[in-house]
Amino acid sequence: MLPHQMAPAVIFYLIISAMELLAGVVANGYIVALNCIDWVKSRKLTSYDKIITSLAFSRFCLQVVVSSDNFLSKLYPDFFYMNETSSPYTVTWMFINQVSLCFASCLSVFYCVKIASVNQALFNWLKLRLSKLVPWLLLGSVLYCLVTTVAFTLFSYSYCISSHNSTDCLSRNVTISDNNTFLIHGIGSISPIILFIASSALLIISLWRHIRKMNLNSDLNPSFRNPTMDAHVRALKSVVSFFILYNIYYMALTLSIGSLAYVSDELRITVCTIIVAAYPSLHSIVLILGNPKLKLASARILHSANC
Image (cartoon, rainbow, N blue to C red):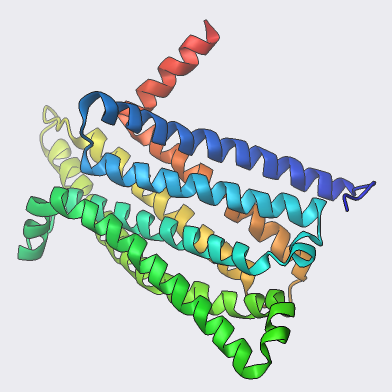
């Protein structure tokens, strides 16, 4: 039942959640729509556009799922318990979240292979075949997330049935889901997290060395001006911001479903869910600002709206 009176803190929380939902839907929907329009016109998409379109779509779905949970948890606290929908919701969130994490790791790997200056046979091989590997990389990410989600969902129910009878499992589905969510999240995220951190660290080091080398050439020869200097600086800023946002999101997500005895559950969950809901929109905005095509198109839209 909807509460007749809500505390100011709850109202503030709902306003923040509404702003995050609006930003996430607009930013991610804009990326998906623009690239789909380009695909319809030209019948092709670059490897980068394929990755960010897939990432934006997964984050669009993630934003809707997370924001819906934020609203329902405050407006209808007993919704999941009354309708016995906690387990289906947890499975849905788990799959979409894992897909979003894997697609973000794919983007980091793409940046690393395309930009990093590494004289290794594997990197040279990947650079030559990356455009053909991207669709399979995205498909493999979805299959990986599907397998992990199904496997640990079956594990949760088999564990419940071994401990209780089937009737108890159905009546306790909320508790069982909560007890296994942390395990599912942690194990399922190990591979994309390691891949993301390794590729991001390698790219940041490579870009930093390259920028220092170009600065040294500029100091030795004042007339020297490399036109790619600004592009590398923008790439470094984008990757660093991506790295920071990604890790803040993962830590907040882990804290929101983990157990910390020294932190109030209500305070911990409230702060972490706000951070988690902000990530799908914040990084998409970073992608838009760092992509000339997306940035130019958004500027045209804003200009037309102001006219």
